[in-house]
Image 1 (cartoon, helix red, strand yellow):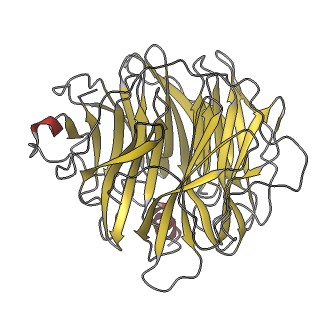
Image 2: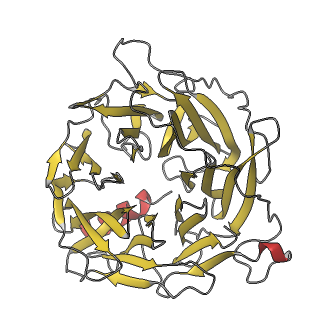
Image 3: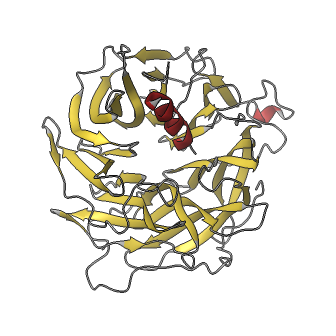
Length: 472
């Protein structure tokens, strides 16, 4: 019976506007406000050490394929044909809890995900390939040996460094006591096997959330939510210098009511990011009370985390910060997350929000999408991913529910407009990505040519796909 409960818990933990509009932030409804904390004089986040991005010139011309989903083999408009979707693996994935993607400077794409082969065990998958042209070679899928009563790679994250190294972080769980380890490994030049796993942290109990970032010089950072008891959890982090061993960083200081998702979904999920100057940035989903949460931001300075910045707290009347994502461009920070008002009359809806700020300025909140179907407050079925290209333009991949069991996968990106500013362009990648009880997961990165690479697991058929465009 315990294993049945565990399988259900894994399933319940899965996560998760088509228009071109100028990105002038609209008024935030329902008491929303841009916000940071004013109750402490400690530095939140200075810009010292930020690197001014090189001038990348003008971005390539872009356009929408609004009537041509990327999944269509032949598009209505021939200029949309270079936008493609490919199946990564023929085998269906079961009870998948997430997906990750990274691209090396050599052009190798890595996609990681798990499949739960039974209620007692699961297997980690790493697909890799080099899709430089439309006729690229079918992905090679690396699987670690399945062990009985062991959930290998129940969650995973990827990063990439030059010239052709994929860095892998996995959360591996023993089915007997439901306690897991955080482990790291690498795939160099696409040559098997993966390097011998290194333990980043152990005794990680509960259905943890993890994040991962690797600097260009190979310095790696990992974070996990660790349960302390039935009501409390903390965020622990570790660092590894090139050629060295993993060493702990200071824990994130806030505890509050705890980080276990008892009172709001997705609590304790985090996003790590290392900027070109080597500064470590953190965004995480913090619990403030019953169905009240906020996205919080820190940087790591010397031996401790800087004082928090509360990015957004719309009148503390809902879940704000679900599924957090973080990026930087120069001294500007970008945070992507979902907001769902606590008390709503049917049909319940959610927003997708993009916050931007520099230094200690208040974040400016843009509502990227409204009216996202959100009937189940404890089990959201929406998800998103974010990346920023060398031109400073934001790219988004969004699992966008329209009803309880219906959602499409959308790809959005910014385009510059005359006179300054940007507008959003939007394509539908896949028209249907949810199943009745199977969620969708999505991951996104962009390469040095501003080309998007999207990995998604479709709940419609329980398979993993890769989407890109070959006109970049």
